[in-house]
Length: 350
Image (cartoon, rainbow, N blue to C red; front, side):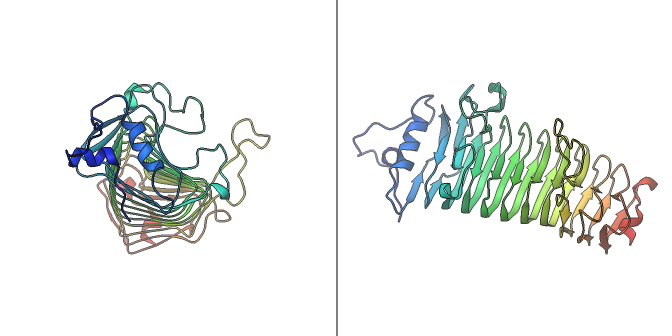
């Protein structure tokens, strides 16, 4: 069942008597959209946002199940100056969400989200600092679909999922020019990201960490990120298929285990069971990355069952595939087009 917001219907049907909210208004747009989300019936429904530029004086928050938020070409949600919140929070805003906070069946489509990062002086929410200025922040959500979304210019990350999310599909979307990562996934499982662009982020294109399991990236371009194309650790079952990983600033992909942080009584020691396991690159192209195209910095006890198959390597400035011990990364059918002898690696040729 579809329920449209009254003020949005006014924009389409001039016969309604209520005053419409101007898309370019600096006040009122967020409150009006939020009111429509909150007013959906118990079984849920859809809030439609017509084309226009909507300035948000705070975050939109979907904290109930069975909600769709749909725009159309030209629908832009931009964070106002000095707000320091996500554009859109999906799920709990609690510091430590629990299973009781879980929401399900959310659909976001055809929306551009602009985090207005140059006008935010911090990446932290002013009263709930555990929330960051991500354009989309997802916390304790199952069965979420995001499609045809353009998430950019955030003071923190483009899109971030954490706190035991499950069954997320992201497709036909782009994540770029964010202060940190384009896509960041933590402590979640069963996620598919396909037909995507992830580029020109200051840190990583993809940042994957903290007990991730069964995550697939397919048919995407990860390029021109200032630090690394793909950063991953403490993951089991990462699948990278048909990706172009090009022109990233430190490495094409950097995979590792986790160590105890500074200040911990075991500072610098390896945290058990935090390596990269059962993860696979297939039919990917690593082109013109600074340093190694693919570096697995770990050991066989922590990181095993990984492979790189049918991939091509060209123009990277250090050996294409690097591991700390031989046999850690199973290789088959790869092609190295080496402009520099240093690019050749024995791992890639095995």
